[in-house]
Amino acid sequence: MGLAAVPDPVFSAGLVGPGAAIDPLRGPGKAVAPIAGKIMKLHPHAYVIVGDDGRGVLVHLGIDTVELKGQGFELLAAEGDRVSAGQPVVAWDPAVVEAGGRSPVCPVVALDALSGSVTEVAEGAVHAGDELFRWE
Image 1: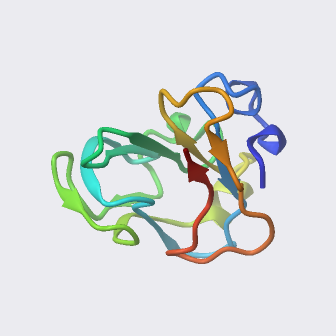
Image 2: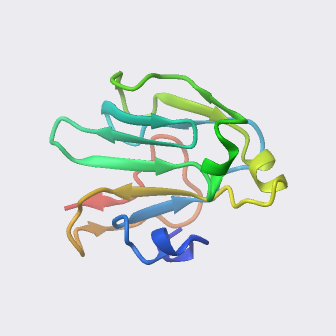
């Protein structure tokens, strides 16, 4: 889905940057690296990976999940690790997040991207490894 549908004005208004959002399947799963690169920031609920081209991508697992203080998330990688696209980074259960009254929707944001530089946002079902958007 497009970021405009994310139930958080910081993401839906594009204040963090352009990108896409994923409404994950409910049940235990693993959030993966959207690009190959180095994990520059890693929190249980969010991470930033910077590719060799210097572009950073933020993945935020659910909305207001920082309030969970890591409960329900398991780190599968460490800050500073090099990862390949599709490599698991965090294990979590979107159904548990939702049962706690929070949205499990996951914004995936192109950090520091210029307005209009993100195109071809995916629509419908996506799987690990599918292209979410193009960053021109």
